[in-house]
Image (tube, rainbow, N blue to C red; front, top):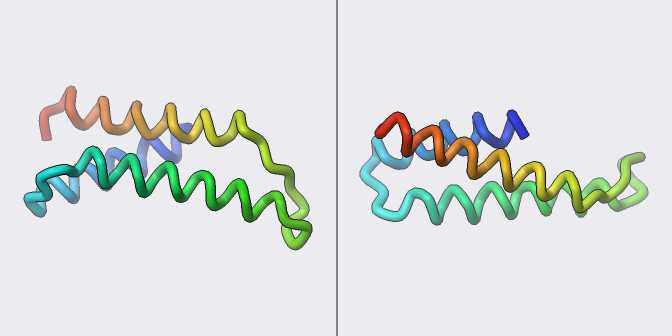
Length: 75
């Protein structure tokens, strides 16, 4: 969760600085897709880990926390 909060905060700050108009949408799509992709990769037998929906939910919560911090600090 913390990693996704930091990642989304950093992405938001970068996109706002670059003048992106819909930075929240871009960050949400990227972070959610990244989290789901990692979980799907973990479900393969190549990596000895398990797929967990709770991890995806935690990643999404972390993403919203990072976006919220960015909006609260008004970057």
